Image (cartoon, rainbow, N blue to C red; front, side, top):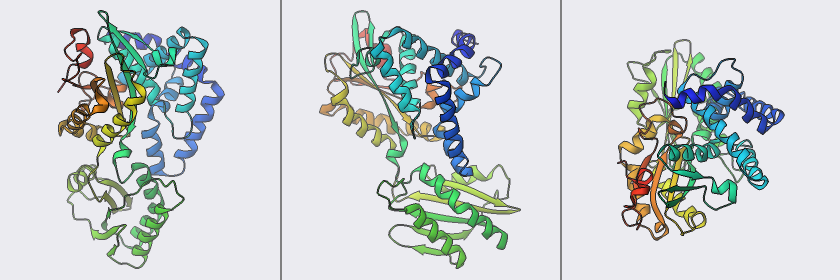
Length: 404
């Protein structure tokens, strides 16, 4: 066990309890009840809540344990909670108010604690690299989050979170809600037509949470229900191409653990998949957008939009991006296919990036420090801007030196 994990275990129970106390016990319980109600609306809704709010649910789970945290991810959550408490004690009343505002934002609606913990974890990571770290955002209301200092050289760090959903035409949240709506119809179908089926959908206009009142989920659900009730095989228009076929996969037996990996291999990494079973019957839903996902490009667009407001230009700037709402295989693929590198380096050539000495990228895998082979080995992926005057500064090297 590392010294880091030992410290986390020692601080664990006390830090978790202290964190919840700072939130407010009643406010915390209300939030947990709210998430429970949301998860109770359907099997796939529960999965969405566990993915979106996994950090908050882990803190709740740890708060109910009689033992200290033992898993690597749990230990890191405990230590980040301890860092939050220490920061809270070290800032002014105005700083504490800003920290409480960050808590409130992360515990309201679809908000999460990921952004707050991303700031805390980035500070922790840079301290481990030999930097003195000041929480300038919380302590001083600076536009950037962290001020790094090493050997009389300083840099500003902006910590940003971007959802992978912003680079997808078919949002996973909307997909999960659709599957919960359709599931009873599939159960009925399998009862009347025992067998193995796949419903393939291509959605050129995408599938997203609506902000204009249009019920696209309801419309698509209605089309699927009609196709099944009329026992048709296809339904095509400009918004959706739907096709019902027999499922011809050797692993397509109910309860066969090989089915999902085979489906993923068959339909590709960007497909949205769901499986419903009834007896020996299997019904697979498979959907994809009309074009490839652009998660890394969404990250680049986000950086270009926020940099002018968040860096002062008085010091070298580092943009620490956390890509959220992404699974481990997708995260590994973005790095392996060099998509992150390509978009980060393209951003660094733009005029908006003239004050940026490096871009770093991470996900929840690195945030929680899980012992996962898909996590970046150094805690983040870094891309240095060779055109910046401070790019070769030895004092900044641990934070900016390219890792790829």
